[in-house]
Amino acid sequence: MHALEISNLHKTYANGLQALKGIDLTVEQGDFFALLGPNGAGKSTCIGIVSSLVNKTSGSVKVFGHSMDREPIKVKSLLGSVPQEFNFNTFEPVNEIVTNQGGFYGIPVQVARQRTEFYLKELGLWPHRNVQARQLSGGMKRRLMIARALIHKPRLMILDEPTAGVDIELRRSMWDFMAEINRNGTTIILTTHYLEEAERMCRNIAIIDEGSIIKNTSMKTLLKSLNSETFVLYLKNTITEVPVLSGFGSTLMVDEHSIEVEVPESLSLNDLIHQLDAQNIVVNRMRNKSNRLEELFITLTSKSEKAS
Amino acid sequence: MSAGNYWVAFRTIVRKEILRFSRIWMQTLIPPVVMVALYFIIFGNLIGQRIGDMDGMNYIDFIMPGLVMMSIITNSYANVVSSFYSAKHSYYIEEMLIAPIPNIVILLGYVTGGVVRGLSVGVAVTVVSLIFTDFYIDNPFIVLIVAFLTAFLFSLAGLINAVYANSYDHIAIIPTFVLTPLTYLGGIFYSIQLLPEFWQQVSLINPVLYMVNSFRFGFRGISDIDLSLAIGVILFFILVLFSFCMILLHRGTGIKH
Image (tube, rainbow over all chains, first blue to last red; front, side):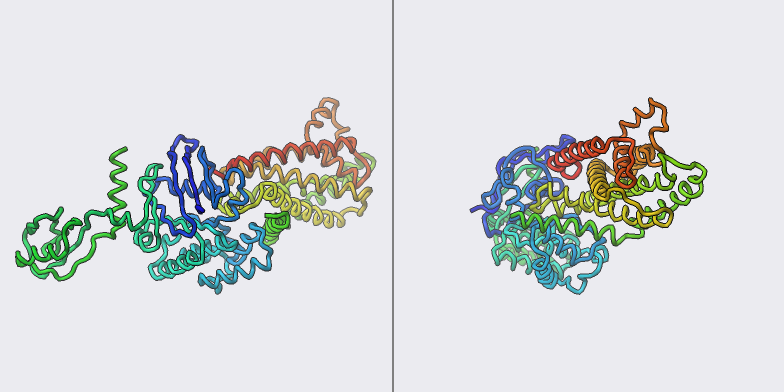
């Protein structure tokens, strides 16, 4: 069964902006799915419609086979959502925000309190349970929204940039937490601007741009389609001009001690080192210029921009 | 989701609403009591003695039910308009919109919060009035039913205002330019029998007149308006505003894109 099935979804806002132009999307049960796209591509509109915060213009949405139009209450009970913007009453204490959300889902207060304790402890917020939410740091507020979204044990979680503004250490612990939720059976849809995060966490991916899905495939397949990668090479000796490299893509001199080389899929790094060695250039260290998904993302979205 | 789940959701909204206005009691509960106490001192004691009797009773006894009613109206309205608008403005209304709660539960939850605040202030003002006048209720059942229905009606009106408001200014415009004039001209301080025939007829358009008079009937046993007509008018407005609120919530007006 599909956790989420979107068919021919359109959204045109009152000001005439066509945010979604008939998208089709399916997310398998148990998947960890990335929904990526540049700012203004339509990600948040799509998520807003699924979460019942935005009215669709046309099309259909099903969650675990239940139609959003015919069974909205059932669909909502299966869904947990962590939005991009903080959307809680900042004057309320942390534990009340989570427990009240349980109440909105019809969970009796005793059970809601037990779950609140569990999730606040899991997410490291228990010591702050009695403080007003406005006193929390940005990272804590994000974790509070995750705890709140989990209170009714949703089968499908939508995380809209859950790690935005969170430091790297905390981000890694949140990744571990999200992976554990997914292992326990919750389907997760993640949007993020940290493409490393999507590459690391997600099995399947859709890229949305200008209101249309421009790629929808598995992460492995997508990364395989990357036919070149750019490396930055730090050189031991000084160079005065760009070395001539046969068969490689663009080569740039960053400064007298470093160059950028685009390595096509058909050639290996050994070939590159060999050619440089032949020119008496010694490579000290090297790194990817950007992560692989980032390169693909930029390629795909710029193609889409050109086409439009 | 069963009826039991909806009951939990309803109780959660009501509890949240009551906690909200209770936490800021210095802003929500005390000012109306102080204001009405001043009305009693100035209009009841000082000026009232010069006015003499109104409809066969002391002026202070005449205005007492209207002043309690005014507090109920303004506070039930203010509670829902400020709470719902804040939830909308700061996006935490989304907590309820994403949850499996039918719109009617959301509406009744907010309205109950407004009713509780309106009646709480009404009781407090009634207690303060005992300093200035003797306690006497002709028909407690009518007092309770009219107080409840009026608080219910103005809580609905507050929600409509909040749905359409786009700034904090907008939630002050209706109370200042509509609610206050209607209340002051709704027979709190005078009997419409004192007005010329034409203005008596004009006064009958004002729905607050029916609430004030039926409330006064409950307290003192006198009214310018027939009681059943007054209750009928209140119920009619409740029906209209309730239906309108349901349509607004169903469409997501002002709260969904």
